[in-house]
Image 1 (cartoon, rainbow, N blue to C red):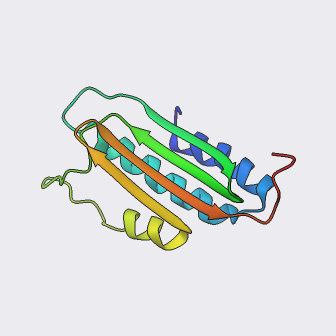
Image 2: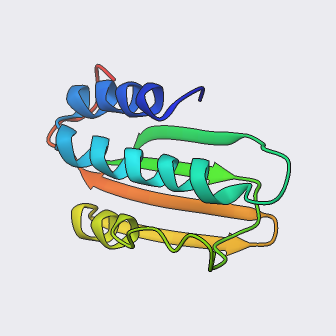
Length: 118
């Protein structure tokens, strides 16, 4: 994705069609992509951030993945420390997978639609 806003809007369209809480989805995607933009490629050449969304098992599943340095502390910029707690609060389920090959944030949201039109 070329920007946080583009990612947020693309996933929001699917969330709307599936009956997921659009505001929650937009906030979580914005936080996950924003964290990747700011932290993933710190000190190395910038790389891709992939955002994928799909319906599975009656839920909206969203992943945000980078190929950066993993979730490593940055003593020069600790950030506000609200992104991850916020994501965990508004998702039905969230998992963070991190290594020196990158980070994947996997989030799920309840839906009210069968997704037949998605």
